Length: 285
Image (cartoon, rainbow, N blue to C red; front, side, top):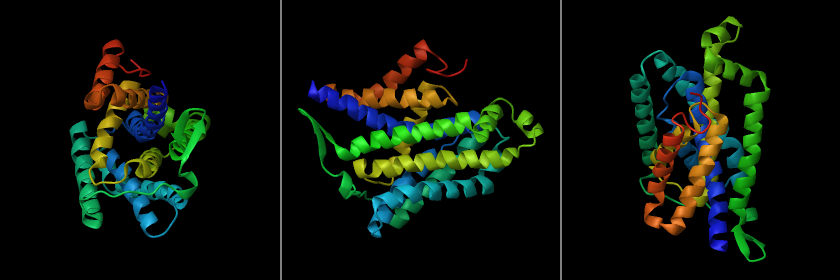
């Protein structure tokens, strides 16, 4: 039983990272109706910037504080220079320009850090394990669960309890109405796009000590993010959280029951949810 309990707790931790990865993608699509295939590249940059900061002798905590805003700023520039010009175009244009951006960022990572992956050390204060009777769990993974839960509450408050959040929710229904209220819609688009990229980068920073860094991790992350968004429902904050936890627990438990099929079960879970709820767990019909 301890093995399965460990896998469930692991699944919650992984699921919270998946939530951070997917929620930005979900919010951007919900507001902008923009299909962002570069989202995984921002996760990739977050992980590698954390790796580089540690290589330079900076501690992990400083990287955790500085890297997400830095990646968000880069995403803000990319949105201003490239992506804004195709918002009104068909989704095919969104896919083409964001896939091109993702490939360019991935190649830059390979040029700068090489094609071989590397490890990021767990911060010294979080090394070791916590013991509750016969149950043993790594301190760092426990920190990830607690930190992502607090960050999720803060993000929920921003989206549900602030003027920006009200504008985002209104903008997802009608950008014309928001413009008539005197709100600069394009500025709001830029802020939300940067926020989505920053949350993906935060997931990359937190994931780096667990899985290390390698240049193709963004592709894998993008696939999982889209699965979670589809399961949870397009544009739904709660749906991204529910989908991330579901996929994390399914993947973690199945890695014990059926290791070869753990990744397959992610897509089986998605198919099962869509058969029961075609618009996702918390999506709007």
